[in-house]
Image 1 (cartoon, helix red, strand yellow):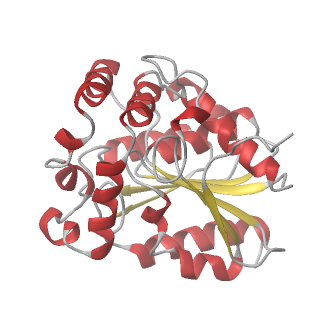
Image 2: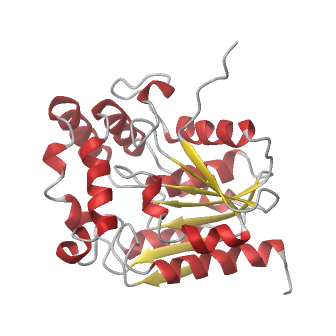
Length: 266
């Protein structure tokens, strides 16, 4: 029997190093972590993945990509299945936006497996469900094309400059190339996501990073996460929603955060 399909992924770094899973944001791919990869892969076995319908991951991985059929819990279970397929049990997790929501869900559902958690420009609740459902309906009708003009303003602190960089152009291509059904299903997952009352049950050591220029999840989302998760550490950087403007700061914060868990007291 052929192996079960898994999320499209790539592994980097020493095979025997602690596993660090990096989750992407809605509309992007694993490329959103490209700038941090060289540094993080020196000390960790880095696992990057694509969301269903994004990059190389098939929308068909979802049990029901029809309207309202996808949840963040299902996305988290796909990630856990990927980790299982690699023969790993414990892992560290960092995710941007929807990728962060997946990590928070993993930390709640599988506390013994998540060694540390980093939420980058993410939220416990991404606003009322109606705008997400409206976006999902639009994309199902017309594809992701109508989102391209406004994406730089949602994603980047300096939309014109960052969108013109090789990474910015690649991320916008990711959005253009996303499968409408998969993108819309991820919107449905965000529509129903609300972990505000559950935050105190997250036991993994947590780092919460926000962007001072983030218009999608402004800093009050960051503060709510940090206030709700016990003993969470918070840092606000001068970035937009994807935190690509300060890659060295992000990689340094992640490295130091995980080192405190792996090597306490050092």
